[in-house]
Amino acid sequence: MASIFSRIVSGEIPCYKVAEDENYLAFLDILPVAKGHILVIPKREEDKLWNLSDEEYLGLMLFAKRIANKMEVVFDCKRVGMAVIGLEVPHAHIHLVPMSSLGDIDFTKERLKFTPDEYQEMINAMIH
Image (cartoon, rainbow, N blue to C red):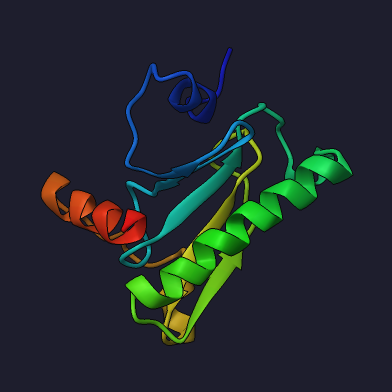
């Protein structure tokens, strides 16, 4: 059975898309730990990040780097943190989280909630 991320890639499930190319997709996390929290995935389903081929892994990191550089400007943060957790969805992915303090990337804290309009504002800021 396809993962929820594969279903997003296929268009079966909508997402708040930030960036896409033929191999990778970035979208806003719907259960973010910080405003602007983005998930970056390979379109090809692979359970673990470390199981990607070297080429796919490097491509994913370069794709994420472009997004993170833009995030630092858009979300006015000191850094963009990256986390690889992978327990919640069996599809390789990384979390990019705008950070001004270490607590901003705490995955044990209560998740934030945004309205569809607020998500759209974040997307608009990232794509312009």
